[in-house]
Amino acid sequence: MSVRRITTAGILLAVMCALGCLSIPFGDNVKVSLQLLVVFIIFALEDHLVDKLVITGLYLLLGLFLPIYAGFNAGITPTFGFVISFVVAAIPFHFLNKIKIKNEPIKFGIVCLVTILIVYLIGSIFLALYLKMDYFPSLMISVVPYIPFDIAKVAIAFFAVKLLKPVINRNKVEEAK
Image (cartoon, rainbow, N blue to C red; front, top):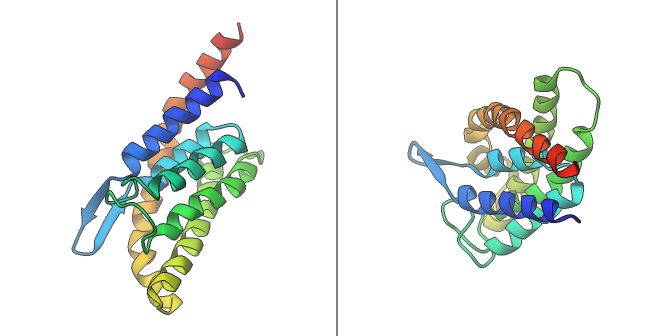
């Protein structure tokens, strides 16, 4: 691994830790975290699957001891399954993002939709098991209220990546010279 890759991964992990703990309250029981938004950006900016896995894996491990999860939580909480899902979702995101589709917004949307489905599935199953509840009520409290926000995160991530990718690629070209 190059110094540049390690540095980039470290910076992205720091951003994940700094922004992943923030939650924006919407109503009485809905708090929207920035974790998934940052995950989309990291997955789209990182070229190497190993880097995606290392960043999300380290985030998972650090959050067991430090309050860097959504809402400044740490350890294994009812929503810990969502954090686990970030590591798992790195794999399909990586390979789906390699598919050649000319329409970038459509491609990004499809890749993120698959990622969201994986996150919802793993997170809601963990929540149901953790709280010893049926799966359907788990979906209703951990997925349904967040669907519109997660769709918005896809759009925001797309534009953030469009802004950041040229800067990262320009630095790669300058480094190669």
